[in-house]
Length: 202
Length: 198
Image (cartoon, rainbow over all chains, first blue to last red; front, side):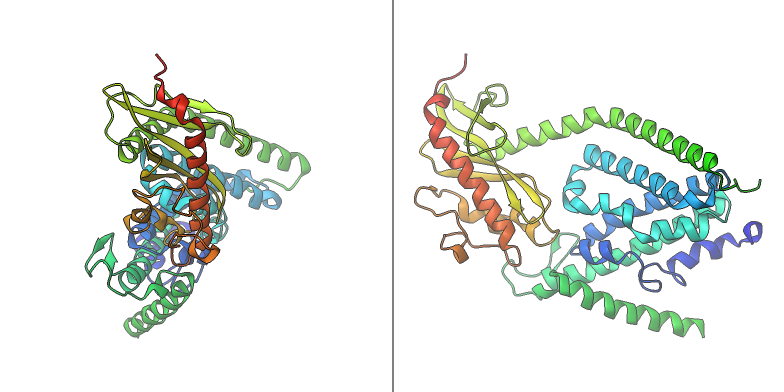
């Protein structure tokens, strides 16, 4: 399969057919945790995408040098290194986002999308395919988080990307900013997403 | 290229090499970002000082006073502010470890009479969207121009005067505690602060 992968399809599968959030339901912890606003979702998505792409490339490059019994610890070290790099860069150059995301940046390490892609894809394919895979999956993750964050921010806070469009003291569905709102919004969005994609597939 | 065999030596060597490379690349990035990180921190501190203090014409960062206190783990940082050589107030770093996810660090600006001028949040790891709202105008406004000797810094649930954040009572408690600590230190050290260092 490795050499004949259709790269467009490879890219698109991460966004639509195998969307990590709405189809595979992976990485639920940061998904539910940080998406209380659109910009949080976007920032988290981009940070994760960077780690995903870099770890995919590196894992696919070293896949033959790692004995399979220790592959998981090796992958985790690679992923953790990139996460720490992202954390340091964010702290130095985008302190605002660094504060917003807080504890969820170090927790990218245990995001199962990243280890999942390293194990299921990058350790079996070449670097180019893995890069495209990481890009597609990362984009799918980012889009899903941004949509979820926007939905929750609009309903729960009456704003989008921090821009408020209801009166300052208007009553909003504060439930959607709170943790249960994440579950509710995610469930409905997943239903909607699968409804749309199953229609177009027919 | 075939896959490496699962021999003990292979496993040890490959993990060893990976950790070495990871360690060096982390050290390298750390060196690269250490200066911008410090700069960002200082900039934030100066901006916070401007935000929380009455207008001043000295450089509070240079006149910082570190005070050891038995109630606090680290020494407390106090930044006195002067305007035309007259003491106008001071900014105090207050912290509490009782936040929902650990440390909450605030900078509280006090006027000369002990009233709170303004508060800036320096560090917090609270839940995004809930506890992080302690930075919002809506929450901070209730502290302005209040004197903690008459305004009880506990949340209403605990019999105080602070309107807690929705869904973030613990964060609000930590916020109140940090502010209280800063106020106590300010009152204790007020006389020392009034005399300029040089």
